[in-house]
Length: 141
Ligand SMILES: [Zn+2]
Image: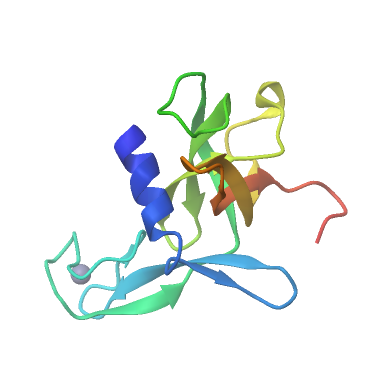
């Protein structure tokens, strides 16, 4: 799991789009041959091996698929954290942290939305930001 987390951080720079209104959207790849959407962005379609891919903004909201609370991780991560898979409407399953959430209150299929969050700090104590998801609360838009 730590490798996936590292990958998520390294990719956060070009895999996230921030709108002026604060909306955060993940940016994946769309295959020009078979139409499959992929996240994180890739150069080769995992479904048909085509290299005809283009950048595609994904929905800001998705549904929680599964999650677990992580109590042990490499140095630098704020613990504990919630690691989860989120399904986006584009049929993409994204591995990400869930932030600002009570683990006890999480439910399968609950709506979550993308945001930028501080997930840890590097060796010099600088905050590391990346994308994460947070439960959508009623009245929030
Ligand atoms: Zn394809």
